[in-house]
Image 1 (cartoon, rainbow, N blue to C red):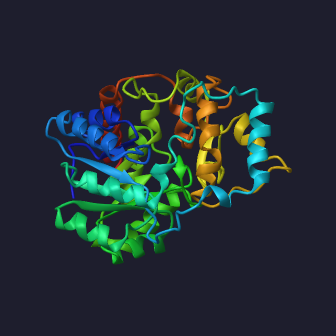
Image 2: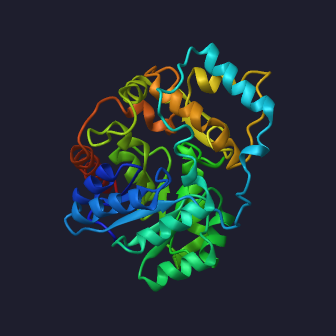
Length: 355
């Protein structure tokens, strides 16, 4: 199953990055979780429709298969957790939000009900793929996507997860290894990818995710049986990525591959983040245990806004994979893809010559 010129899927919360990936011959996937309002996602997908040169693209939602209870969520957050967040922000010298800034911006996109609105909006545009970052989408969503001619993808951190996805009607499996940024499991990509490829057989193509940031690593993914690479972190330091503050790129560019931590503090589910003073505070013995999703999102949402607005690269809350050690310069998406493809071709030729 070939959806793009190059075996590169580029996930990004930025429509400018995702569109640039598709234009450059990859397959851009727009992350929808940041869109609280349907109108905002609609505008972003208008941009994707009009700036991908007619090439295919996808959307990524965050939707648990089981519908969680979403009423009166704030009242379920323990006071000790709120006190810990307030005290930590004070210790780190993080200023309050500017007057008039809405607090808690970014929470709604993690809710199941809002994710469903993302599906509704997406089906009014022209994506060819809808991916779910939390496993198989609900059956009715899969049915709607297939009825509209869309393929469905789901992330998997274990072989049995992948089998479950295929049995649920999912068309592509994203085998996301331990090295990946954001939500990720406990098995490294070198082990996980061939396990999932062997488990699903010819029932679904497998995309390799986690620890991929060079053409040699894409070649390794293909050698493990994957049909393509799914990359997310690498695009955070591209010139098209203009989200957040300059401190984010500063922090990412100076980080090494050992400067990440896997923690539940970002969303309530295990996710790999850039390690800094904020993540270190949550690792202290007196820190409370993170709350389950979506309560943790609500707890830290305003804190994340304040940390970002602080402009301090030592505290910015940022999901990123271990590949961050290779992200050492700001470059256009097209240049990144050209280098990836060139190194991939060179690697495959070198391996072919060894036979």
